[in-house]
Image (cartoon, rainbow, N blue to C red; front, side, top):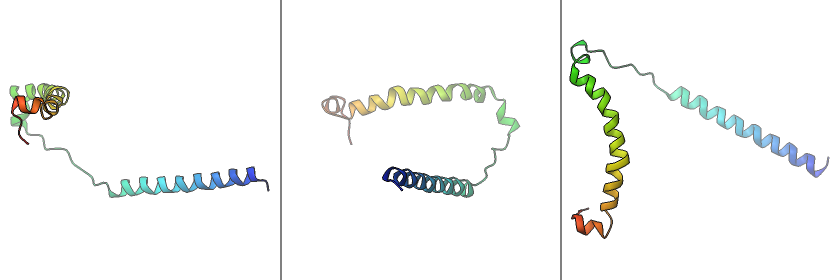
Length: 89
């Protein structure tokens, strides 16, 4: 058997080993996953106009937090803006 054939065979064996490891972790993750249930529907609160408005505004607030507020906080927590804005650690 030539060196090239040995390298190909070694490569195939290592690929099979990686496949078994990946399959093992997939089975492990699925096996450890616990079933969840949805929140109970509360008829008194679900149709409230403020709750419906909150369903719309909450994602907007999360986007503003991640896109605007967190970068702004990071910026003013470093010198020289840290001193200028009075940011304390």
